[in-house]
Amino acid sequence: MIDTIAMGIPKVFQMQRGRCFPLPTYDLSDPNRVEVTIFGKSINESYSRLLYARPDLPMDIVYLLDKVQKHEEVTREQAARLHELKLVEGRYPQLSITNSLAAETGQEVTYTRSKGLNEEACKSLILQMLSETGPASRAKIAALLDDLLPAGLCDRQKSKRVSNLLTKMKNVDRTVDNDGVVGKAARWRAI
Image 1 (cartoon, rainbow, N blue to C red):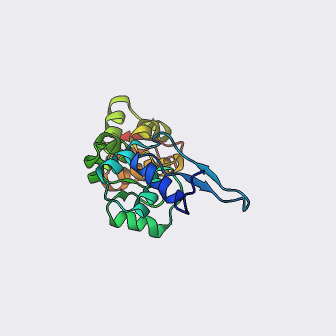
Image 2 (image 1 turned 45 degrees about the horizontal axis):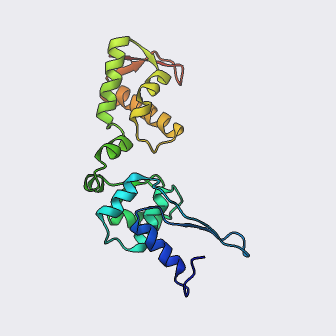
């Protein structure tokens, strides 16, 4: 279908890159057959904008960024290389494009939403809720912050982030306290 003197695969990669579409995915799990998925639309707008803004990127870097946009696994070494080039940020394996790249590609809003509110903004919001509505459970505080925490976090990570935040507010900042009950049943109040 696309083989032209052993240059078909690189040619398809270049064509997809030129269109700023995701790169083809090859399934080689069956030794007697090759399955190719060619995407005809964007998966991640920031990836497409990045390719428009940075046409000079080497193909191996484009390939790694393609894997990041498809949420496919990249090695720690590959992630480190993307970090060195300042193309992605975040902890491995949850990677996203950098803030400078977001600005370069017009993705400031998406970038800021994916990063979530900073710690001080979350603390301020918690204090506002506790001051205005009175004591609240950790579940209600977590619900308040759910859409405001980084988009790449799973539910368990968000829960841990809220727990760490409340502990810091209690023990370091001394701005909140609980009713002495340990765990999820605790009710938090502003001091």
